[in-house]
Image 1 (spheres, helix red, strand yellow):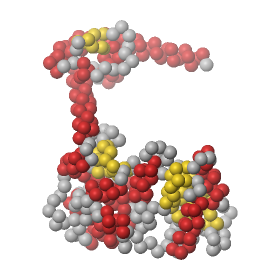
Image 2 (cartoon, one colour; image 1 turned 120 degrees about the horizontal axis):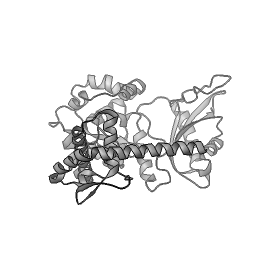
Image 3 (cartoon, one colour; image 1 turned 135 degrees about the horizontal axis):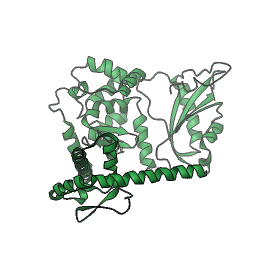
Image 4 (cartoon, helix red, strand yellow; image 1 turned 90 degrees about the horizontal axis):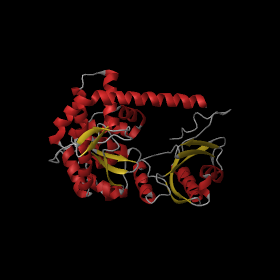
Length: 387
């Protein structure tokens, strides 16, 4: 958090966290890493932003808690580091350690436990998280530039989004592609050897991003900004410089490649390279089935001469009291625990006759549902009174 983790900690005197010059930073980072390696299988500091002249804190990423430290790992870290300050923030904790060279001052050490710690995917997730957090805002820049093409990087890996599903279920719309940083960069068309060598400065990093095969000024300029994009632009200095300075100053960026990829083309490329056709087809089939079911219930709603709560009661009755045998509807003796999928039970050819049945029977199932709801309410009231 750039040395700001303790800003809200109550103290009789101001808590000073001076920025560290490289020699102090590297010396202290090495000493702390050695200590943390006694508690974790993997300890690293994600690569810092290129050209950084001083440091507000030291950010560690760790994974693989060594027994028996897993019972109270955060207090164990605090004691091991001799921290006087400790601020928990979910899976990441900030520790204030007395500054080695400055009295009445602290060094802020942030320790983040990698996602998936202790799971079979922990090693892969550790490397992916190191990549995600490296070079300051690099992955945020890549993410925003490629979001219109349906690509998303999150804490679990690189994904492609299915456009048809995304409007109503963003999580279910994701198809996982990889969490291997090299494969992800190769898919983006980014130079992995240049990445591994490290960037000389921000301009070098920005050039590298804009040389990816999917990057296009037309896509960047046409992006739809969300509220968190504007917040990121205010809070994240590297991202802000890329958007406000680099792109306007480099009108040639990403031009002359001869191809501007469409979202569908990127999807097809992802399905081919990562062999995800079967998953995609299954997701689309489920989506089309959902659409079909919703269309059928809209047809039923339009058929019923009702509105408001009365319409809602009739629809609940149809969902709770109608079963099917060989595609033909009937009124059940007991309310169903789950609503059958009507489009799965009724063939398209039989739907007109089923609609006629609905018109003839909706009043009966509506009455049954009203009675069921009344009994359920009375039972709930009775149980509450007994307590």
